[in-house]
Length: 100
Image (cartoon, rainbow, N blue to C red; front, side):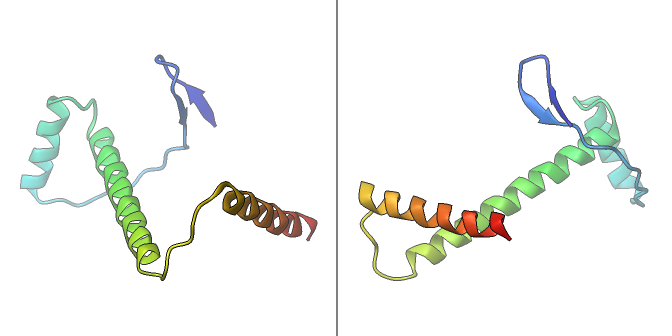
């Protein structure tokens, strides 16, 4: 479900589930300190850590794909005709998928 927040940003609201995590006392204390320093709950802090990890991993994957593309061979000129043909091919593939 999409929701618009107080600054008119669209965000996705996902249903919440619970998960118990065992931590050493030192880590539990650290999370509680972070809660006092700007997060409303330990869950909010952990969710933020997970989101940041997801972003970092997605960036790493994108970087790897970009490097793979750079190493894949001779470059092709990206002219308007190139983009037009690429768009036609993509639409044709999309049309075949929707007909199945």
